[in-house]
Length: 294
Image 1 (cartoon, rainbow, N blue to C red):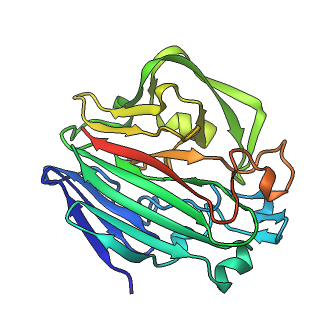
Image 2 (image 1 turned 60 degrees about the horizontal axis):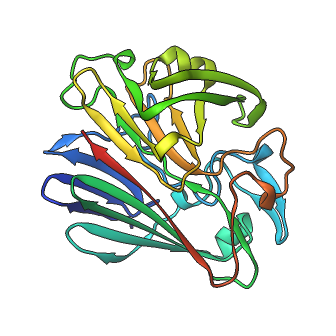
């Protein structure tokens, strides 16, 4: 049975569900910044993406260890994660491979998800260990969705918000098809020599998901007219997905990714996907991003 774990630093609070190790709440002074899920738009809040980000072509790939059969965003979000460590301000969850996971993804792994609050921000850390005897290939990512408008900006509209970057840059994004596959040969310029990307539902109607590559400073602020929103810092993540569910959904997901969905120019060999991390037997790696409510 799943368990909700609450952590706080006295100012910022978070609640995490052991089912999927999914963040369920992010508050500042008791005000809710995280999307709370709604079947009319999108029922999830912040799923953990592992061992893929996005989708495989027809949900299948081949690997050195045999067929891979994974639905969108992988398997971590589908299982209860054991709580292995906790105190008032942090919690660590653990998910290990089983016969069931190996039937879909034929590799042995241990995934530890740690959430910690400190200095007004929540960090989310992925720690992956290869517990098998062969190389472990994977990608991973976060998928937190945030309320728009944010607390303090009640009455503002979706189009009053922007993504604000630490410096001016030009952003060119791939085309995403209805199946979620990426086409990097057909691109769209969404910013030119600018540090703000205004949000609009029309933008997402047209592009489905905005996939930003090599964001300068690996940082972005979701900012409303009164300056409220969330700052996301994601050093070590080369992709940032930005998504909302429909033309009137009152949230935006800001998703740090290592890797992305299968692209048109890729084969169906799992190990050859963009951004793939490969760990030798016994090796581990960590990736951390943080969310600061403003």
